[in-house]
Image (cartoon, rainbow over all chains, first blue to last red; front, top):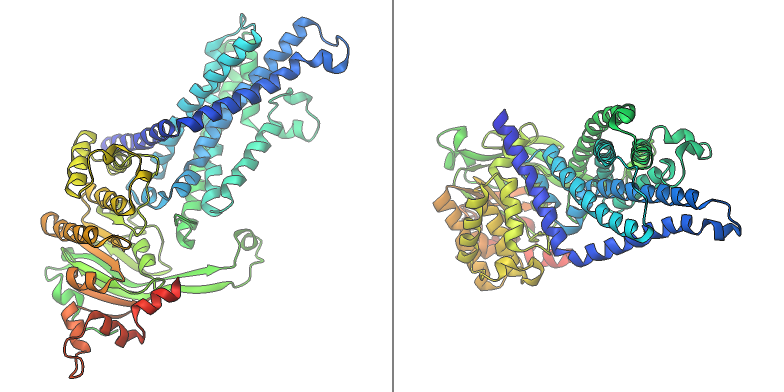
Length: 279
Length: 291
């Protein structure tokens, strides 16, 4: 049993190593992607910088502007991280289909959970590094006041919250199995819905209905709220334990649910011939 | 089906363990024009049915090179996908060394590997990176794999610089050799070759054919070779199944198949003659029709 688990874990590194190699080989694209993300994040944070000039009067004090900058910056960064994790996991099928390797990966003697574990590990590391680069640029550009920040509780809640997003990502990865031609675009709909209802750029409880009610079911909302509380208010793990426990519980439900949904999708794909490389 | 020899009579004298592959009345039908969402709400029509594999039944003995001969679109690749666990049969069964491809999928996957007509790789990755990925999936020790990759690729005539360059810079023939190395690396006991030499130059084709023989002779592997190259099938295969419209229309050794159509007017028939006689058309015409 333990031998089997060891073998599966070692096999899961195949996906980590392959994705690292792909990232290195597509380094030009990675540079473009980072620049695009930095530009997007800066554009969002600049909204706060220019809020007074936009309304023609000093609606907010300098301190409030700084708080808004931090609020939006955290929203942009955390969302970027969660989106990278979600995309990396949900793209595990689209990538293989695009490269034409899907049949070889699916006929290899590795469990689908091994495949997913490998993709998830890579997504966490990749998402973290990617976000760190954007964070450095934003901190330098806006001289954010992080003196109150509790980085440990922020990192912990980010890690715990990633688990739920991985579960949703696995469900999303089923779409390219069922719909070879448009499945990948469908995963973007899930992502867009999450960004809309999770209080990324506006506090979730301040959103209009029905978005505020819908946000209750989004794990991303609690990750973003928790990280804001940790980085702006300096809340500790003890202060955030309820959110962490909730996120952990959501992850424990969403990961097996994602694997089950994916397994149904795989069976359907094998019955209908949708694993063909060209779709 | 025309056959002068039953599979188990010639291959598998020692019982089921000698049977590498057993296909028993396997069928696969594809239906198009029935969108998933319409099916979910029960509004899909009957759609168009295509019978890709129609109650195929045959056995392949251990260490046999078994040819499946037929033009494009006659179910050869579907059959290979059924054996490779990429498709599930609608009816009947497929067993690899006694293991059912559906019920014992994980076991079957450890026994097989495949080379398809398209050498599918991560194009930006080098042969080494692609093959290391494959080696890890098949639990080959990384240190051992690196050495074997270089050894196999060198043996196949892939120059050492190309081993570390992106696959997209290689010719199709070279890519196909890397595909063969990928299959060989996992030491499969059942190797599925789906038109592995299509599009290769004569020299590369001969090299691949020599490799197929070596896999059988030196590694005790059983080889299923799908092809529409009559000469290749004649030279390599111990037995050949001629497939037409998802069915096996004849199954025997190349010599026995040719004997079926031997006559005074045609004293030395070829496999092409056999195909023409049994299906009513030439394989080249059929390939052209499909283009």
